[in-house]
Length: 101
Picture 1 (cartoon, rainbow, N blue to C red):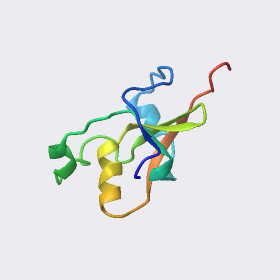
Picture 2: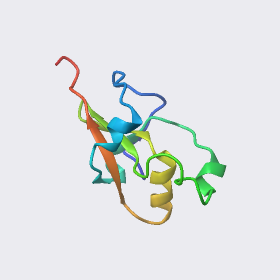
Picture 3: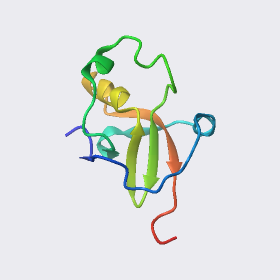
Picture 4: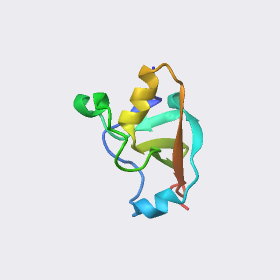
């Protein structure tokens, strides 16, 4: 199994972080098996494109919420890492307060 779970949608509250705010979070290593995806489908052409990581942030975006690590952006990068037989990636992690806080 590559990911901890595959979801369709984000269970956590809206955070309204901008790309500039994401860029201020230092990346850290995460195991792919710890991540929960927020997309059930991906575009194969984007996965196989040579320049697919050229635009946008180099590091995937992960939201930590209620004990889970949700892969918000970067599914193609994470899957490409798995296909290259790597078990971890570097990602920017936004920590949100748990429910009830």
